[in-house]
Image (cartoon, rainbow over all chains, first blue to last red):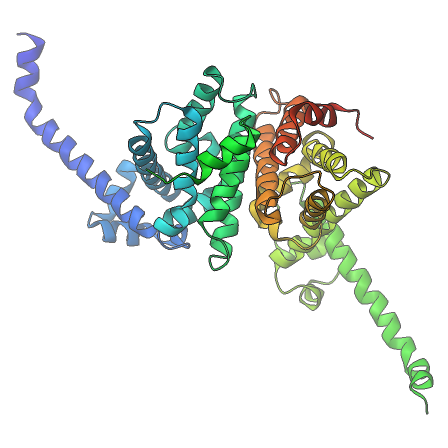
Length: 214
Length: 214
């Protein structure tokens, strides 16, 4: 009996189980994502989460070891989606400095376009800098590409990344705390100065940070 | 009867009370400061705090509405002391760019000189940017002085402040998380790039960020 035919014979029930498992997990994450809108999401009970997800209470621990693990997965999914949107918006841009400007400007504007995601970013804070999905790896790739192409000065990528990430988190904190006085021009001014920090001259930094967004 | 003589006659007992009140408050803050060394300080009970302070359990609420209020006061005191140290170290420096470099380099080095204060800064995070004592007001004064004297480019002080503060918090996060691989030269590189961001040319930024500290 070949492994293939053995697999064929035995596969049907496990596959159905796998699909059910995946569906339950997806429902839990979807419910957690809805809850992220509320700044006090971490206080929701597991019973509330499984009820919102329309899955059995007992199934929670088949998928997640703890509530924070579920919310981390939900946050990772949201940020990965935002990262994919930036990828799509910058796919035709070959200059890493220009792609950097677009990505950071879109991310700052989350305060207006997706305030709940901006709030999640602000709440997660610096721990996001260590993430292996979402925004941090994309930022690192851009910084390294910018250095390789000679667009950016020769700075430790980690130092550049914490400076950019920290500045962006600082802006989100400022903007979310005073939405009536901060606007997009503050974000663009920060991007302009970050481009100068990375080594661009001020005139070009201004052009890139004020250009129409794709 | 003049108000003065009335005060003279009635003052003795209240003054003694005031001194006792001030002493109890100072003891509570001192106990809280000791506890800040432990990353889980917020979990300590009020009974543990009053016992460590050697004051009556009931006296706590005469001074603080809540445990976070006490710890906030303790953090504010620690950071105000660090700010005063920076003031002393930079009192002879007339150039705001140079004073900025010294202050940020000392603050980054807290990871080595006072790791518990560095940890408190990292834990408090962006909320420190809104503080009216400690580091935030000193940073704002330097940024405004640097702009007035023409040393720094014309940037909204709030934007410059969140970029500097966010970068510094990012560096503390990075350094505290990997003390074996990060060192002072990373901090100085960040300061160099922040000076470039603020408008200095790269050569001068390098000089200021690598000069011997006072």
